[in-house]
Length: 232
Image 1 (cartoon, helix red, strand yellow):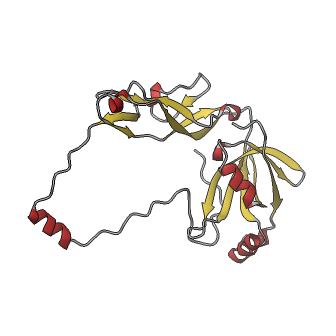
Image 2: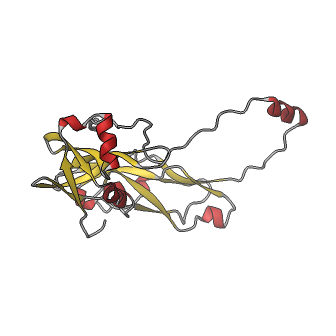
Image 3: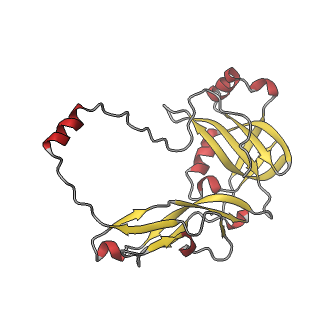
């Protein structure tokens, strides 16, 4: 995680500003509606600078970044736990922020980075199949890693890299099932040419609608839900 602590200044919002029209005017002014909750304190409606939030999300530690949240005269440690994008232009619509106690363990998702070249690919001509790209861990906020390295150099046919094989240094507890596969080697499947009958049948079939893959959470409505997500 970065040693430089980011500061997010949040401005309280009155209850009258929680409608769709008020949220639109807030975004036009250069702010984004947000809510702050956690630490056994009341949920507070605020607005934040979207440029600061975007910078945090784009950092090495991403949404797991711990930063100083300033709301009026109160400063607390916080994290971004949810964010919503406008689907067409990709503008931030709404942010959920959670107060963090540095002496209490929390659960977060941490990305997995593959390290090395698998022997099953280099020597046996197989294909590396990445089954899991992130893992849920429990730890103190100061111990949240930006990523977890997974050494795949010894992977060959018949072997599986599992969550239990990932390094954790004793500071992390894996919440994801430790028997869950992370990566393994598969063989190259030979493509078989379709028969004329199968080709004709495929050509006459109605094409299915392509699946739209969304990166991050997006929302089609102007205003995201104000209520915080249920605790795990």
